[in-house]
Image (cartoon, rainbow, N blue to C red; front, side, top):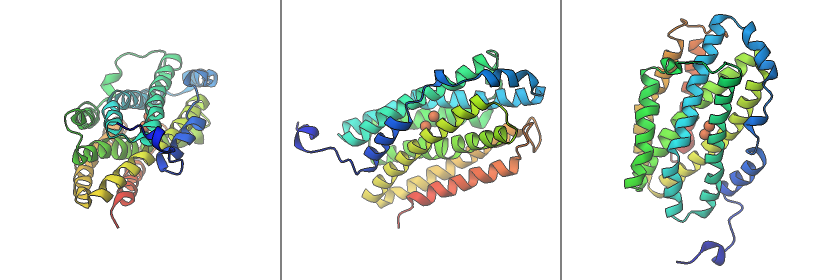
Length: 276
Ligand SMILES: [Fe+2]
Ligand SMILES: [Fe+2]
């Protein structure tokens, strides 16, 4: 085989290399360094319902980050096997960042939430279907079949639905609600950094899907089909989150606003990839 770096330069103008450069500047923050002192002081001053809501949300965030950390490798392997060096360089930062997100939320649970028990009680049916079945299945399918339709299903599930709809909606709404109340500055610092990392992850996913659909426009149908199949689960996660509170969460988040934000994310992601 001919090694790319012996034959030609890395394509610094390509989107993956631009994301790689960004990730090396912005993605190197350390979850262990985030100051949670004020958060620890805020915690006992919250209402019981607010503590419960924060534990619930963090239990969704931490398990979601763990799932994407565990499930990314088949995609990295696929890209490496195709010899797409620029994309693989970027993907080395992607997994590194997911690991740090997992560590950050676990640290918050331990150091602010006092290592609570039984967090799995917060995971409803839609959440479990998405993170325990759909995501791992879509990613592991790449181990047996690296064909473009399988890559499309994996990336739609991981990048567009889990990251582009669910994570963006969850992080955005929690960040705003805590900021409006001046609460949990350490958690907000972490959310701000994680949102930046996630924006790069989603940008890569959109790039990958655009590349696949441009090479074979018939794949667009699979994008639409998979998006449509997973949207009810994403909205189900919002529903389950509010099921204990009615339409308004203890931090003043409105269910309709969150569902509308998730729906708008969904449309925006779809539009980015739709062939001209
Ligand atoms: Fe993440
Ligand atoms: Fe991510």
